[in-house]
Amino acid sequence: MSMPIGRFVIKLKTMKTKIRILHVDDSIHDRILVRDVLEKEYSEYEIISADNRDKFEKYLSEKEFDLVLSDFNILGFDGLQVLGVVKKVKPDLPVIIVTGTGSEEIAIQAMKMGAADYVIKSVKHIQGLSPTIKSVLEHNALIKEHKEAQERCKENEERFRSIFENSTLGIYRTSPDGKILLANPTLVLMLGYDNFDDLASINIELQGYETKHQRDEFIKHIEEEGFIKGFESTWKKKDNSIIYVRESAKAFYNKEGTILYYEGIIEDITERKHAQDALQKNEQQFKALTEEAPVGIFKTDANGNTTYVNPRWCEISGIGLNEAKGNGWINAVHPDDRGIITEGWQKAVEKSESSLAEYRFLRPDGTISWVSGKAVAQVDDKGNLIGYIGTSTDITERKHVEDALKESEEKFKSYIQHSPLGVFIANEKGEFLEVNPAASIITGSGIDELLTMSIPNLFIEDALPVALQHFERVKNEGEAIAEIPYIRKNGSKNHWIVSAVKLSDKRFLGFVIDITDLKNAKEEIIKLNTELEKKIEERTSELKQKIDELERMNNLFVGRELRIKELRDKIKELENIVNTRNKN
Image 1 (cartoon, helix red, strand yellow):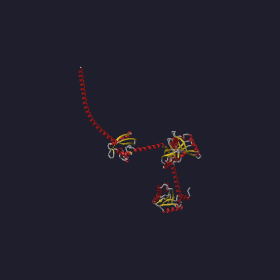
Image 2: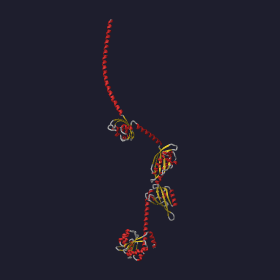
Image 3: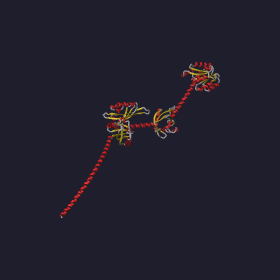
Image 4: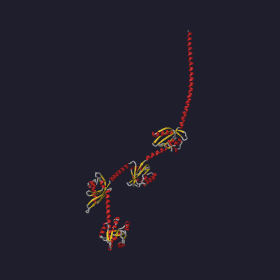
């Protein structure tokens, strides 16, 4: 049934402002006739005329048209050639052939080649040209619409097939009694089957769910509501292992309202379930650990507001959970530390950075506890900040030890500075890291100069091997004492006693005593002793000679006395003889 011209014109007006027609005709009379007839019928026709092949091909390639109207007999070529060119360049552009021959063979040939219609060139038929154009355009629009619909349908089918084949979710269609009618590769793989036929051999109602009541619950809900969304259950795989799934499905009915089948999607949430279970377990463990932890533990939201503190934190700070929530914990911080701690914490939160600080809590009872507070940012899977978790470690005892150590170090430093011994602290390369004033006096070099030096360039000439050997002994044995000669800048030779110990693999402490004066005194004593011994030897020799002379003289004296005694004895003997004779 044809559309009336008036309605057609209205429809065309709603479609576009102009209907562009390429009119190919070498007769100016015919071109004027066609233009007058068409513009009288519908003023929005826009007719572009071409009276030769070159213009026709030029206009066709450069402009857009809704229809080509071509005379059959044209100087140099004919309507069939026009038709051929149009179908080659713009195959969807409709062509109407106008001829005065009336040959049915030409009409049939033109229609076979793709002409949209065929009009006899006569005043009567030209008068009816506009309805023909209307009919051709309407038919062409329907063809185009149908073609586009087919293409959309094909695209939708391809899109559905692509989604079905490539979806990361399992897609299925099953009958109400559990027969598997359709399943995509993801579902087949998800359930551990080799192919669809392998999967289709089971009944999902009898063999798919871990427990029957899960299937019963699914059926009950979908029959009542017509759909189900986010239903979580456990399914059995081919090897009888269990997977956790989230299922959404819809029931499809026939005209009588009977369910024909279910279509649904399946998401494997096994890993998520395990992760949730692990998270729950971790949370339980976290709670158990935090309740018994020897350090204070706290949590905050993304804005840095405290949401949780454990019992140990309360012990250290002296306040309870409710008092600590939000920013209440700040009130427990020592007033002298409160400002810098608040500022540092706010900066860390603004930049989503970790926080590390040492500060004091002033407990309600007036006692002070030192803590080392550390907080790290917590982020979600997308990297968004969700809060902080941190620890507050009681370092009060450590602080006391550090204070005592600091005092000890200050005393030690004072002892070093005022020590009459030269003190050297060196690294493993023998480079001096610290020296005292006595070391400067002993070496004759300034402290700053010594700090640029090392053992190899402090000792020179014959002293260097001895010094290096001594340093190696200290490194290997832990301690060593040696006498080492030292040449001062002025060329004078000194003598040192160097006693060194190994503090660590990279620190060595040495004490130096300048024994030059002692050494010189000893040498002087040795010299004097030598001279004394020489004089003693000389005096001893003189005395020995005198003693020998005395002994000789003594020997002479003793011999004379013996001879006198002998003479006396003989005289007495003679007297006795004389007396005896006289008596007789």
